[in-house]
Length: 238
Image (tube, rainbow, N blue to C red; front, side, top):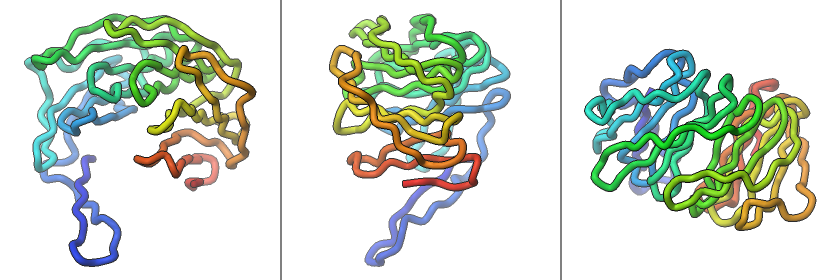
């Protein structure tokens, strides 16, 4: 379901969220991850059962139009889950849980989509996250570890580091630094990594207990807040 947000002028009230006309919009089978690009004019989602990624244009009123003329839906690999746009909107990464790889796409300046292929990412990749300048990509592998890849200008991914972390699930980079936060669904913790510009880990990661079965994690726009969704307790920790 796509929602719109409009600020109440002159009142100290939170944003009002309303369903966009025409919502919900059709996707492939079992949509899992969803992400907007940097301008908010494109939206992509993963379809787990179909092993595809759907790409939509977003109108000013929030209406979605699937970009079938560009080839949407695009083939990914088995059990596509997490998805992220690079901060400049040039690349899309998709975690393919059952295929143990990441699909990578480039959005070209003239509006076409280039399929760059897949990169081996480890056992059961669950989520993907770009850092603030798009030069690094983190991949959480639920069965084993967290892997960080460098991202070349042409979209080539090169493995820079692997850190053991069974149960790794959600991931997000801070918007103001190379701090990476990963939830651990098995232990009820989040792990905080200081990541060097070359993708290696600096020092010993901090581990914070947050509660039962943390999954999704997300920083706010200025990096001052981190939200952790916990399926085991039907709650969110900030």
